[in-house]
Amino acid sequence: MQKKIITLLFICLTSFSWSQQTQEELEQRKSKIQDEIREKERMLQEVRGQEKSVGKLLQIQKEKIGLKEKLINTTAKQTKLLSNDMYINQVQINKLKKDLVVLKDDYAEMILKSYKSRSQQSRVMFMLSSENFLQAYKRLQYMKQYSSYRKMQGLEINDKTDKLANYNLKLSGQKTEKEKLLAEQEKQRQDLEKEKIEQEKIANSLKKNKKQITAEIKKKQQEYRKIDAQIQRLIREAIAEANRKAAAAKAKANPKTTTAAETKAIETSTKIVLTPEGQLISNNFKANKGRLPWPVEKGVITLGYGDQPHPVYKTLIIHNSGVEITTDSGSNARAVFNGEVTKVIVISPLNKAVCIQHGDFFTVYQNLSSVSVSAGDKVTTKQSLGKVRTNAEGKTILKFMISQNTAYANPTTWLNR
Image (tube, rainbow, N blue to C red; front, side):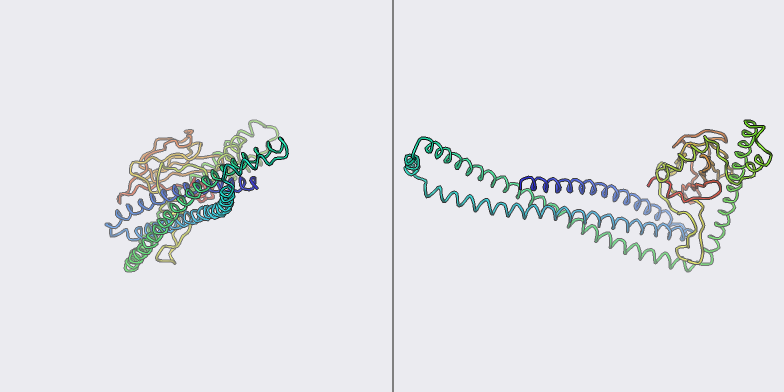
């Protein structure tokens, strides 16, 4: 029985320790989400004063609503974990109460028997009525053990009473904490409703200027496609150059066995023909999917990857070959992995980009005002590549892309979240 009790206590304590750790993790997650919400609020304040930025305002508002929903879900998880802890503590309280009832009844019965035979004379007679010395000795030991057992029961009652008081105190604190979390959750829900009303107002404002906004978006999309085409061309050139070198190296190493057809096949391939060293770099890059550091020290993704409908004009598709990360003014772009700079691209006098090769993978860092590396440089993880440009609207936005050969990938799935 004692072993079962110890096992139950161990399980409860382990569960409590695990949930406490999870509560801490959830609290950290909440703190991070709240930081992102504050960043969105700051961005909203900046954009509200600009008449031509209504579309951006709606996008930020939409992202802020998403963060609010994440915050509500995180608080709900905290509440659920706290309820589980409270249930475990209530089980312990119920068990202690039952144990105390049994102990107190047993102790009361023992006290009553002691009261009835409390006189010194009855104890002496109990000893003198022994048939022999051995029996008298055993009766003396019995009285001592009886007295010791009664004392032990009294101590056990006190111990369980203290434990019960502690569990009741803990449960009371948890109830207060749960009430606080539920109140917090309700406030978050009210805030979310306000944000949705604000979003609707912005959307209505956008609809009034549909023609102008649509023209602006299409113009920007055309500019993006031109830049993407330029980057794609430069990546293809980098692939062709790498394959030319690989073909030359193979022909030099095996001049008798390498045919002209093999050389031509390598040189004209649309994918990089990897050397053993290049294959190792490529494998290492791929193995770090989901763990790559961010290309800026801190920031938030303000435009996601791929084709996505405009938040108001659903028939208008916005395309993005990478992700746009808004960061602080004066921030540096930094390499997400070891590699070699293949190109420094001058898109315009105010917009530069750096392309880095990692085996058959490429990372592109666009919208830089200045660059601190050159083509052919070997770079290391988190090494600074240049300053991120701050645009006329006061936004500091890095466009970051990842491709394997010429096929773009979603950077969000590669970065450490």
